[in-house]
Length: 179
Image (tube, rainbow, N blue to C red; front, side, top):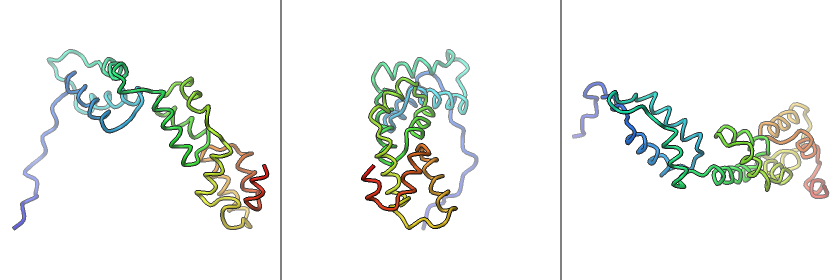
């Protein structure tokens, strides 16, 4: 005989938060994920909106919790930006896509530019073309629509138009090695 898995009624909503519960949420999140200060702050604000705040507790201060996590070394925007940049570069993403991703995580412009210092646009574009079988790494391009699709793929990956055009126009891998 199996257990009765039917619901016994509506689920009880989680209790409203206080400062200690909000800090525990932050710690549990940071145990599992590396993140930026801005993203942690957004998470904490989202939790406050979703669950509410205890009426008898002092007003919430997610800024203080985020700052405390930075002080303790649990959140490091520079290390996060470096790791995210390396991961996106391994997937063949261009500098534009990397900049957009870091910006979405709330990384400031100086930290983004520092993280992108070692980014090689040519190597990233070639990795992307190999992975996606574009240009000389895939079937010959006879149709202008196929060429446009490949150029669009490069654009969505954050590669500049000129770089993408050189790769898509190459007839063989040897043509690319000579550049």
